[in-house]
Length: 501
Image 1 (cartoon, rainbow, N blue to C red):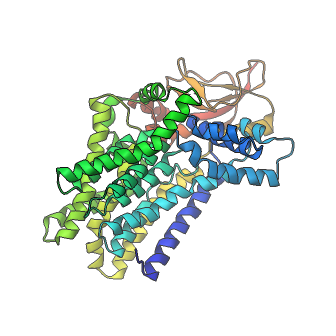
Image 2: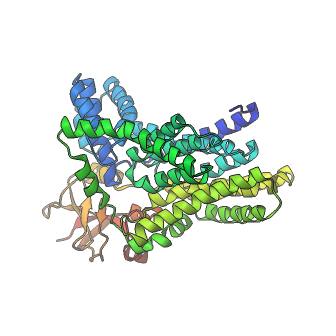
Image 3: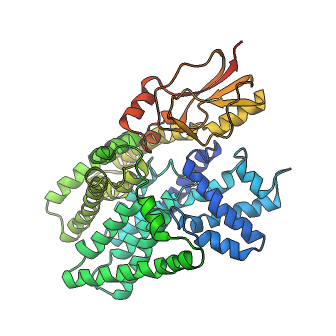
């Protein structure tokens, strides 16, 4: 695709600014806030350790051995290798590579610098996707700009999670799928491989993968025969990756992948199935705030444009994004509220954002082109203000690992406790309760389920810091409506208390 120099420069600057904002997000730490982040240390970091010790068989086994979100181990090798090299060149005193990761009390931001890249690359991918569908450079740049301003594509970028990498691969698979004038078995196989890789990295994107298949084999196909060829090619492409992995796990490692997948498929049950119908709108509304209002206005413009006398190519592009958006939403509702197979989480619902944005760019671009540059600059300024209003609270967010580290430095040994009543259990608390210790650190962990809090223990409150659970987007990662009400009713805090007599 030929890009003129001006468009290339604007896109490059936009992606650079997006990455610099992510560096600000990374500065405050926060890695290992989510319990699932330990998978990076358990698999990728461990595999790289074996690799550096020249135990190649062990490294291969760790990469290929089935685990939840199996392909994430391979994706995590890149940041783990870079981090391992830097560690080797300048090791912290008294720490081995293994103890460095197990203590959870060190600086893990080197890996985070690499994990922030896929969400930035998605900005460029959305530009290419818009261009592939026939959008002009201005519309494609507006789409990239709106994605760069999206909070849901910002907040996960410093965490050791597979969501951004999988989504980037999925967008690339859709980019491959869009040139649909000629049906080719080879092309269908390539699309199938890319689509399977999206699922392989993060199984939670099953609805995204099904949407790509529906669009490629249905919406973009010219007839039933064409659909059958595409579906067969996609299936064959997926099997090219899945079959060797399945055989290696079953016959070399002795892992029954089918049984593991069946067991894992029922694990997405934190939250409420019934919320699936309204959940995407609630999550996007709270997570995007003012940006969501911009999207609504742009979508209204897109609806108006679809009714007017636009050329067929433009209408076809808009209908494609609308088909992607509607099919995604219906699949989310089907899997949650209808079939009760998986609860919708914020990290899954945000897959709708790129298609909202592509449709928004389609709607708003003609209106901006018809105005002078001051109107365009005003639009850009308003989007930037709303985006920064979302980004600043995320950047300033303080996580319990850093709070606990500071408390230990100032007060020494701590007793890790909570105000949540049974059956709340800690995930990610790196210490135990000890009634003999003078200082109590309360709620310094990821607790689930959220239950009615008890009274604070007697003693002098030395420190009070907001718990990350107060951050609205994090309340849509497995909490029920009742749990969100408990957190929002009085606010939740991390307390350091000096034990009373």
